[in-house]
Image (cartoon, rainbow, N blue to C red; front, side, top):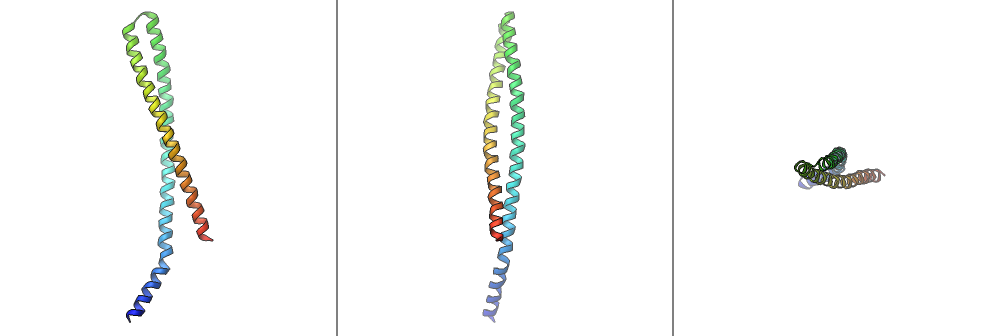
Length: 123
């Protein structure tokens, strides 16, 4: 009786294993697709921040030139400080965008590999 039960349990486990593995694979693929969407969203936000910071840098440069032209050194120093801050922000946003592009490439690669593995496993 115990042998029959053990044999039945082994057969049941062998029959259900592909379904369990398939469910895990689909969950991983779903997570990879979700990460791709997330990385795209972050990249769009970084690009928007870069454009905004670039506009701020241009405006600050104009302000510094205008203040120096009019002889207002106090405002020129304040605007120069703001200009440095905006340049630093832009530099950090560019770095973030570079990292997000790298993450996006990796996540897209993972999605392609998952599709290929799924295709190969069905053959």
